[in-house]
Length: 111
Image 1 (tube, one colour):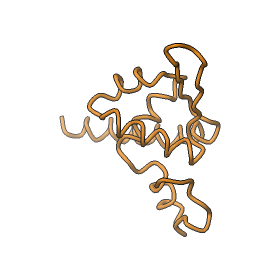
Image 2 (cartoon, helix red, strand yellow):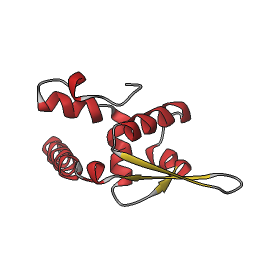
Image 3 (cartoon, one colour):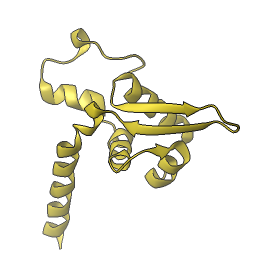
């Protein structure tokens, strides 16, 4: 999605709506890494791992356009940009917690 999703464009199913907004692997990891607090771009890239700079930038822009992430630019040289979750983004915490718990249970069942 290159622009903010309007209500008319959203799927009728709430699960599909949620997946439309966060259903990308990188978006979920961005959310995970921003839950504890604000991070700079380089910190996010390092904590996420193998994501390219181009993809991370695109995902952050998309999440910002959809109201999940806030971007703050400081007028410094070199420029400093920080990302944090909006209240809407923070409201996804129970979903991420459920994913975490399910993943732990699944890994434990394989042992």
